[in-house]
Length: 316
Image 1 (tube, rainbow, N blue to C red):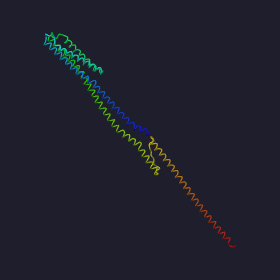
Image 2: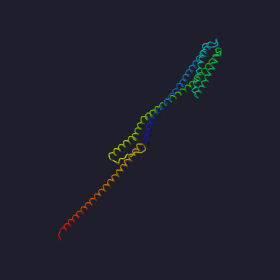
Image 3: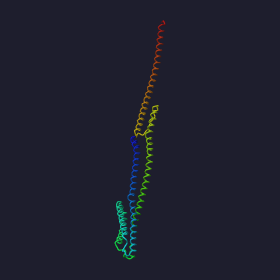
Image 4: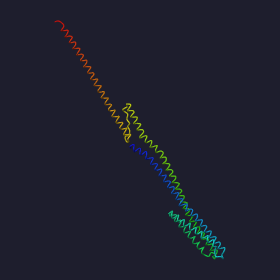
């Protein structure tokens, strides 16, 4: 791997980890906001509407009971007073308003189970409204007390069914709230764990990358410097022996090749010098022998000339 690629990797790994950390943080925040909004915009309003609906239902039943009790006590008047009828109509209107609000909230949620439970609630509310209509449009005061009591029992049963249906939705919403809260908590925990792991990696990976760069860049450069110093001091056997996969390794390979070439050339010069020295010695020895032979010949010649001169001077 080239040094350029190593530098790219050393730069990209922390950048990628940082991008992952930011992405997970953004996703966690978005998911948390979504779950929180779902709780605030769907679950909480439905729970509040159900509480108001239960209150209006109890208020409606209380107003009807007062109307029926007044009718029983005032048999001659033919029913309860007009103020109680006004209260009944107001309570019924509020109850219908809460049902419409709840239907709108459930339709916006788009949950099939919520829709099924609401249909049951609407059916119970329809039964209650039918009984209320019968009470407010009939001559309650002229009916026997037993029939009035039977009507009260029907009203109580209808209200019980309505409250039971409302409680079913409330239980479902509470379970939904619990599930959403659990999802929010679990997601926060998972996001925290993943974020912590990424933070640890973000802190440790640069150390690992730095150590890798030290091993792959700094140490080879230090070895090249050592080899260069050894070569400069005359140790021509010094070699770097680096892995030639990157630029520094190729530089080390070139340095080793240069050192080998210089060493071979130095050996050649040494052999040539030794050969020249041997030839000079040989020639010197040959010259010495020739000199001795010349001196000997000169001596012999001198002796011969001296002898001849003596012989010539001697009379016959």
